[in-house]
Length: 497
Image 1 (cartoon, one colour):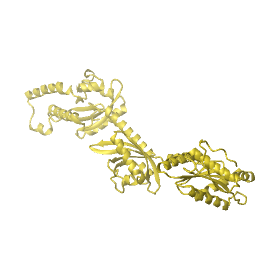
Image 2: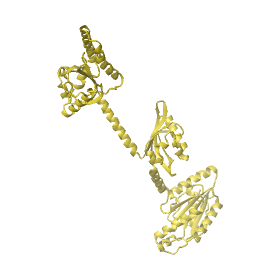
Image 3: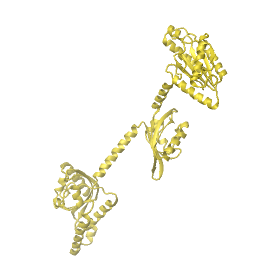
Image 4: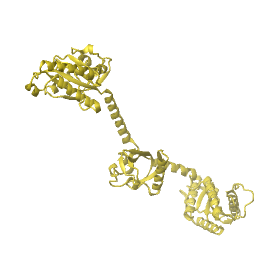
């Protein structure tokens, strides 16, 4: 091969290096070319005189000692026989081989490129480039240093000519880019990991301008799954702004939370609803923070779909306050609701009505048809009562077949009218029994009001329970108004079946 006699697997450095290293490489190459060869045009014009040649050699020696040896890049020169004639300190530092080990022979290339196959590839690449009388630029090769470590070198290389224009050597300038390559590889890996994370994020990542429309500058592909819209539809508000899909009832809260977090210099975390393209609401959890990029203020963060979690929370919340059989409020919630209503009634001087309902002869229903039939009757009764009361009224299952209804802002007369209507409606409505003929049931109802019959929750419970118990004693299927409660507050006693 043409270069095999004087070059053994040279590794070429990239031509376009950054900063002062690039400037130095170009300047060094130009200086060496000027000092070690004459181009063809100048050669045809004149030959150097002996004095000029000696001056040139002296200048080269000074240049080598003051510039080449102290350079931060690897510089070596080969003669026409492939022997190393210049091997600077950077070459020693990068390879681990001293100048005395490599000068005037080409064994160094076998040391640096111990694999014959790889060494032949480098020979072939360099030979191909230099055969066309071109400056080699940005050629990368992998060397093995004296300590056994491998390094990546990028090369710039070119021919040297004598006074007659014949090739008499090669200059090569190399730069160790091992760390740069390692960083490059790490960056590629981080980008791959980020792309994988973005693709599998159960939501979307974003960067938007810090303004009311939330104008998006970047939206991940998860946007389509979360919102039903393509990411590009939000970029620069091409089709709509992100703020437009935030639920109307939540938009003000979101803006307020973000502004507060920015004022306090902390990230924000919010839960709110967005409107999916198909019209249904999606609960999202968002975490983000403010960022300034090139003088522009942005918000950056992620949104994750939490709709399923919200559904579970709502289910658990309903289980905590609702009776599982009838769907009515449970005893604990009834007491809390009544407490709250009495606080409001005292503040605004309102009245509050309370009805206490017991199913007459309910035990006989269970004994005759079984407990499943009794459960069916309670469910139907609960639905019937819910159809008859106002939206503001609270119906609860206190226990067994006992039900209670809180009537906010209802006086004694209104409470009595409601009780009479319910008692009559239940008596006239047949209850369906699985695999049996429908049956009719009746209820006994006690009525009490705040503040007429009691001033506290406990006292009101006691008064209305006693009224219901009296209604059962007087023949059932009737409504009875309570008498003033005793002074000592206590829980209502157990009522008869």
